[in-house]
Length: 109
Length: 111
Image (tube, rainbow over all chains, first blue to last red; front, side, top):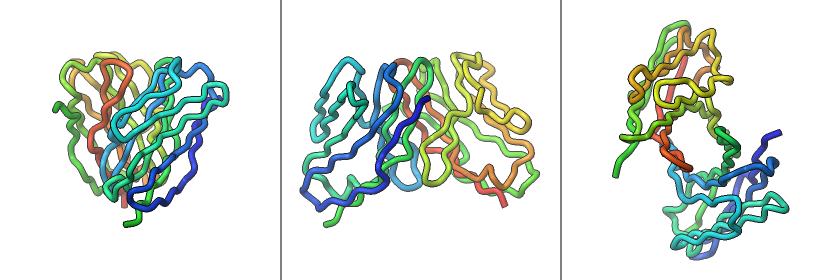
């Protein structure tokens, strides 16, 4: 079946790197996504990766995909207090997008 | 930068009343989605449109929820009658390719 799992909580110090992890079950995913949600707001697309890639870098964000283990990670370099939010992993399968429950990132000053 | 618009941002209603939410997708985006997000969870798809046609409404509680996108542009999601368990954030998203872009959402509280 389709399932996306994430750890619920991550706490880091300002200036450190954050790594948010995600596992998914369906190997037929075409794209995998990372979204950011701040309190009371909609989801903001951060980045996405095609399933035949294993890495994508965009400024402070690095996405790593291990298709064999069905594992996706998001690394945020030099984490800032403004990065505090909930981060959602999602996979697209055919016409559907399945979201994880989100990882709450707390950045300590 | 183009954005998905939603209104209202907040809605408080009593159970058994009717509510309606509106969404205006990014111009040119043929695909429109309505999601429901319960506190502490990820979004769950209610209905997906391709232009004016419904592509997937398998998770839409059709006894009380309806959605339309008559001209293939903006869309309305209606709940009648609202129940206490409908309290959630209702998110609209649109896409023209691989990525979906979300609006700010409508926070519904049913008393």
